[in-house]
Length: 314
Image 1 (spheres, rainbow, N blue to C red):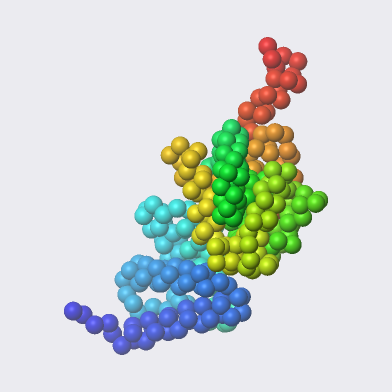
Image 2 (spheres, rainbow, N blue to C red):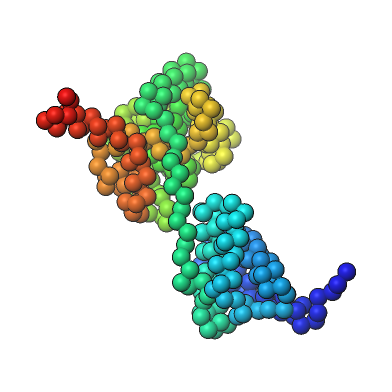
């Protein structure tokens, strides 16, 4: 078994020290989540291992890394059939790390600065047809009224809220009772980056929430949805409540809470809502994110053409 030379050992320790400094900075200064910091560490460890193999030695430092090494790393990830989103995330970790090294005068410039982020795979989101959505919600409402328990009413209210307002899982988890105004038919959702938006609340969703609020029992007075122990309902339990009911109309497809958000957007566009309004209701930062839902609106455009064009119906 060959041993690494003393200079290479020292360089490896120096590389590790710089990564540790960056991760402390990410945690303390940038206030990134523990999950993000852990992902940064895994990605940088993987990048370091690749560079060592690429260079054929462990006797190198971060200041020796050049643009070709990073591009080769990305090419290796593509050969291993990683998703473009995963490759983009790893590049973001490398880019953030070298930006930190440049800012702290450890490297003259970042070799990752001019490397383009790979385009994301355009995967079409899963969603329910209007018929399936109607069947799912109607049957959930009937079952909840028959059962009458807080848990059954909670499941119904979750489905109606997700479909009526297009909320994210995290937004439902963080929803407070005071954010739901059944009188005006509005919900205040706290989205990504702490941005608050107001979303219309449909009549059926308001009815389901009213039934649940009247039965939910004692516990956390702030949280809109409670567990059987009276604590704020966890994200995992919300997902369980919803996916168990979605399985009835899934037809072999994997549907999640996000599928109801996709259905919300798709059905609005299919019925003539404008893209900007849907963007605002979803809480998207840009229209490009919302445009993915327009793939389902071809049928609507055909119907418009058929009605409006002089020879459309011929």
